[in-house]
Every structure is written in C-alpha cells, then in structure tokens.
Image (cartoon, rainbow, N blue to C red; front, side):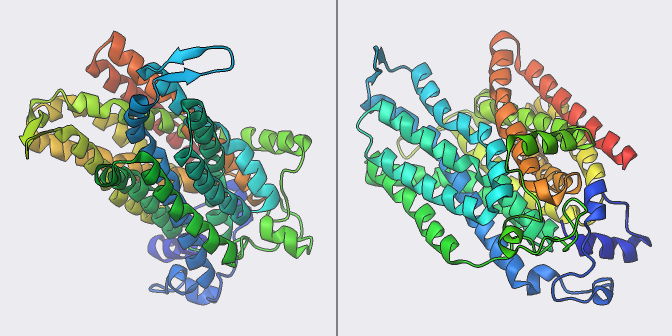
Length: 478
C-alpha cells in the first residue's frame, strides 16, 4: 500500500483522502522519494515503483524469497510417499516405530509447526536486527536444511532437517512484510507482486519437484537441486543494498524524534522489541486497540484457507466431471490439476487485491472479500455438481477470491500498527495465519470424518462471515 498513492489518488478521485488507521495516519510521509508532493497529488503522476530504485530492489528481494518459501512448503508432501517407501522404521532413542501414513504425517508436521509458530519471534527479531538480515538467514537456512535433507541417512534425520527448514522459513513473512511496509513507498503494488511471487511458488514449485522426481528418479538429487536457488538468492541478498526505512518519515515510529543512529534506523524506525518487557508492552499496545480485530480476521482467514485447501482435492475427486481418465497408458487424476489451476488463478487475485488496496479502504476490502468467500462457500457444492463448466467457473471464483483478500489484511496490519513494531505485528499476523490457521486442516478433517461435505462448507462459510464482520466493524470505527 502506497502512502502517497492512497492520499493522492483518492484525493483527486474522491475529493479528499479517506481517514487512515491511527498509527499510519500519524506516521504518514509528506514527500515520496524523488517526487515532490505537489507532483504526487497530480492525476497521472508516475508510480514510484517505476522510478524508485529502492522500491524495485526490495520488491525483487521479497519476491524471490517468498517464492522459495512456498516452493519448499508445497514440495514436501510430494516427497512423503518416497520417504515412506525408503524408510520402513523410525528409530528413536527408546524405541523403534514402524513407519505408517500417520507417522509420516507427524514427521511433516515437525517441519510445518515451527513454520507457523516461529513467525512471532521472527517478527521480534526483524524489529531488533533488521528485515534484510532475517531474510538472508532464512534463505541460507532453507538451502542448508535441504542440503542436510539430501544426505539424511534415516527418517529421524529427515525430521530434523524438516524442523531446521521450518525454523528458517518461519522468519520470512514477518521480516519480508515489515520490509515492504517500512521500506517501499508504493506499498500496494509491492504487496501485490509479493503475493504473486508466493502464489507462483505454491503452484509451480510442486510441479517442478514432480517433474524432477520423474526425470531423475533419485529424491536425494532432487532435494539437493532444490537447495541451489535459495543459496544463490542468499548470495544476492548479501550483496544488495537497500534502505529499510525509506517509507517511514524521520519523526514516525512511536511519535518521537529520530535518534540519529544510522545503524538503528536501518533496522527499524527508531524502535524495536529488544527485551521481554518491551515485547509485553508493545503486544499490549497492539491488542488494546483495533489490531485485535485485525488479528481475529487473519486467524479466521487462515482457518478458511487451510480448511478449504487441505481436503479440496479429495472433495473434487468425488465429482463425476473430474473422474480419473486413462492417458498414455496411465491413470490421470484431473482433480489434482484442477487444484493447481485454482492456485494459479490466485496469482491474478493477489495482484488485483494489491491494486485495490490503493483504491478502496482496506477495512471495506476485508469486509467485502471475506463476505464473498462466505457466499462462495455456501454456493460451491450446489453449483459445482451441475457439471464441468459450472465447476470450472466456481473454482476460478474461489481461487481468485481466496487470494484477493491477502493483500488487504497485509495492508491493514500496516495501518493498525506503529512502524517501530511492524515486524512484531506481522509476526502475530502469521502466527494467526499459519499457526492458528493450521488447525483449519484438522477442523476440515474432523468435519469430513464425522459429518458431510456440506457441513464442511457451512463451517467455512462461518469463518468467512466472521472475518467479514471484523472488517465491517473496523470500517465503522475508522
């Protein structure tokens, strides 16, 4: 979301800039980098993203890192059956356990759990030491973890490597989003490109992994090759020079003056969480205001996201229009490709959502976006069972809408948190999305086991409706 573009484009389009969030309004920059304020307010003024080198450098950095995080995240399930075939027992210090599907699920959870739970400490570290350093550590850690995975001699070693990956990957979202919110003037566009890159990792990463497994046949070689892009990106990150606080005015942060410390300013806007006391103080500051509604919305968003995507291929496989077919002597399962296509449609949704954050109030975007998801959840099964064309249309709408809301909640966090604790606020955000939200898969599994598909989509509709309510309350209170 762009400081000037929101104030400027809305000023001449609607007659006056809309009121901004409490912290963001107070910290709003008066001059965009390299463009006089008088020019910014003119219709047709050039986008800073096109002329600001710092914006381009930061946006490119976070796009690469975001794509790598989700490439690894969604490639791991493809390796589970390979590991289950190779490792027949899990050797623990006190016992040896036969490997089953449940055991493999636990092994994968060992990697995914810190990925979500580590977001909060990652946000604290981003505020204290700077986002670029955290992103560099994330890339090095993920690459090293996959190299360790490639030489793992046992399933226990595999679990350890996955845990290392989860810890390294967990710091990315709070640090990457804090870097955009404090270092990029054209924030809306940067959030959009950032989301597109993440979706490309989600959709293309598993496809690349599957092709490599088919072509090479050795999972260890494949995993080793997957480590290379992260390590190359780490080298580039170490060499890049960016201003992490270019979008924060000198007197912004907590309302106090700039302390003049260049090193500290590069890491944060005159403030960070460096002790337990400060962590508790800043957390209390966040949650005694409207941020509590933002946090509730992102938790519900995570529950909807995981609850839908975890079992969507299984639900789709029950539709006659997506029944398995023979192709080149093998059974082709269309629901898998429909699922990937839905994720790819999300790329357009991410971009559209990011652009819309520059044009409409983010609170209204939350209310409308999640309300749309609630309606789609109610309509999905009745419409999708009508035939292949209605199913494709409904799938495209769900994929688009599922991801269009993400730039809105990212931008809303930036408006309802002070710059000095932006990393902490994004840490809480992704603790909610990936930590609490991870329970969405368990909720979906339980509903499908003990109830019906219709009940699952009713639960998803409730998540969407409650998140929409949070956005509506924020809009009324702004």
